[in-house]
Length: 330
Ligand code: ADP
Ligand code: NA
Image (cartoon, rainbow, N blue to C red; front, side, top):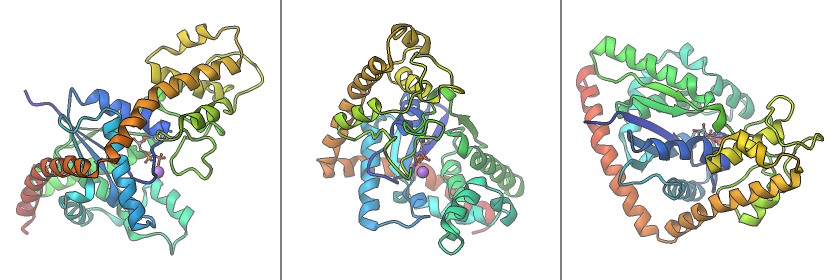
């Protein structure tokens, strides 16, 4: 029996991924790869929609791929590749842009947010058409499911609209994908500002737990995490966002229920709880960090894995693209 196709990706926008990327994306992907024919991309073509340094981008792309593997994405089971290695992404994005409405693209809230941040002259047309490239990423592989965070849901809806529009104009060509929206239990917040999402592009990294950081440094960040004055370890997102976030991280990394962790720390202070969490994080990130560094120390082997996987992706993407060309008269 063939497994349903799944597609997801991350931008190589930092040297290290952060705990939210690990818990909210990589751990979910790792668990899904047995049941799906999964394509996991490092989306470097998306990363160039904002200014980049070429050498840094190349390095971040390799490091991101290494972290996928180190976190348990198996390049022999899933297709783990770098987006720009597969030319069909850019080609299909162009074609899809010709059936995307200007107003439709202009309604994407992420573009509105980002372009406000950069200002009109520093905002590229590529940032505007970013969601069309994302639609191409997904549709090339006839993906049925697309795991995404809340902020990407609108882009998957656009992808569905474009697939349906293309199919009705030119005949059945694309599978119409469904978003798989991330669970609340996988959403991680900044340790210093626990109502804001932890992000690798945060202005300050004081509250960001880096997957590849020195372990003692990560432990220190946990000990300094913002909590509250109550002194009791229990989950209350509204009134205790800091402690609730630490509980979410603890539960996600151990596979335990929040309730059982609350019980363990009943009557004990935040210091004990943070020490416990620091230990959990060190135990979980340590081996991932070690494996990632091992992969990065053997560039030829990583290149070989990425080239073999790009070839797997190419085969599927080229077949879709050939069909698209044929149907639109190219
Ligand atoms: P970042 O904000 O770190 O740059 P991205 O926007 O590139 O993250 O997201 C990459 C993936 O990681 C997406 O699947 C996204 O849902 C997930 N992700 C990012 N930040 C978090 C977070 N704080 N908690 C849970 N998942 C996250
Ligand atoms: Na980002």
